[in-house]
Image 1 (cartoon, one colour):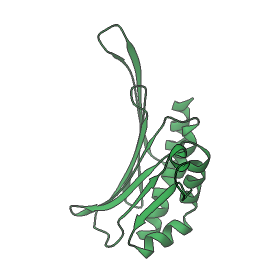
Image 2 (cartoon, one colour; image 1 turned 45 degrees about the horizontal axis):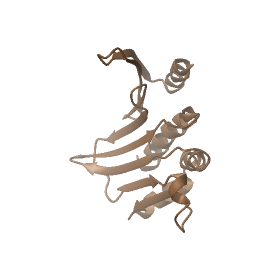
Image 3 (cartoon, rainbow, N blue to C red; image 1 turned 180 degrees about the vertical axis):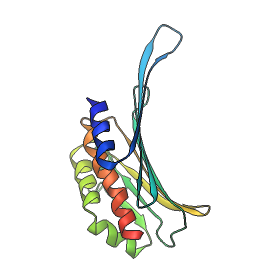
Length: 170
C-alpha cells in the first residue's frame, strides 16, 4: 500500500523514486523491517529531496537547496505537542520565528502551510521547518515524526509547501 502511494506521488511529480526494503538482523535472533522511501524531484531547477524511513526509525525529511543565498528569508517553524499545549496559555501549536515580513506574507498566503497546520491541529503531526543560508546556498528543511496515525496525509502538502516556496521566492 505504501509503495503504491509513493509510486503514485513520484509519477504525479515526474520524480525519481527509490525504495529500500531490508530486514535488519540485530544478531540476537531479532529482526526488524527497515523501509526507506526516497523521492527526488526537480521543480523550477531546484532539487527537492524527500525521505521517509519506517521500521527501525519513523521520521520524514524533506529538503530543498537554492544555489544562491536568499537575504533576510531565514525562519524556523516549530510545533508544540498536544500534551504541551495543555499547560501553556497560548494554545497555538505552531510557532513561527522570523524577522522577515516576506516570510510572514508567504505563510499567510500558502495553502500548503494551512493544510500542514490543519493536519498538525488534528493529529500528532509535529513538523519542524528550518530555512537558512548555509555557506553559499539557501536551504529549507522539514523534519517530522511518522509516529502518528495516517502520517501519509502530510506527504503531498509538504511537497506542495516546498513548491509554493520556490514559486514565491524564485
